[in-house]
Image (cartoon, rainbow, N blue to C red; front, top):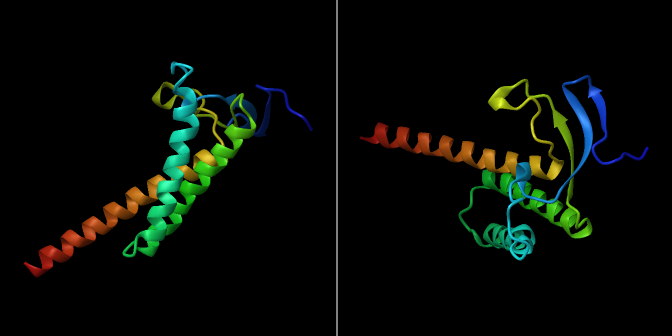
Length: 146
């Protein structure tokens, strides 16, 4: 089955749809106002450098806790996924996951996204949660010793 851009298929009624959308910008469509000469830098060069830096960091960090490796791998994988999509589809990455947001934050529908976006978001969220957990644990241990 071939889909036309903008076409949606209901999967779970109005709650979840597969919608074919091309996103030539950054997450949630940000970056549409970027000057043309900056677009390749922001959309390709910066992500390539970020992925390289993360990979080098993961390889060289001797004291990196194992619990951080999976979230970092998710971020790198998502970044690579979007980069490959962007390189082979200059008209924009394909976003296709479309959820009803029931008016939360003023959105009837959450901005359409893809698996790579999810991977990056989950990786960043896990790093934040793990970091907060370890900091709370460190403070509690410090208070016990005092």
